[in-house]
Image (tube, rainbow, N blue to C red):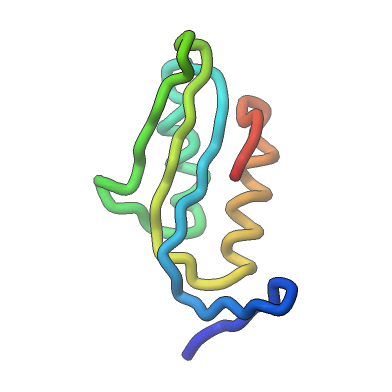
Length: 91
């Protein structure tokens, strides 16, 4: 069974491969906290998380790849990420 969501004129059929990215300070624990926030909504395998430091090393991006089950699931993930005080942006 697929969950369909209108996005303008396009329709998305779930489940779909999806990657969410969060940006924040490059400090101990930030990647793990992003993982924890995403895993509240979907399991992540050991290879699902990727990090990349900014040029000056002050910030880090954390990408989590998973199978998105619904638009509501994605909305909940983004809401949790955006509510974390250290997450500067979530894409």
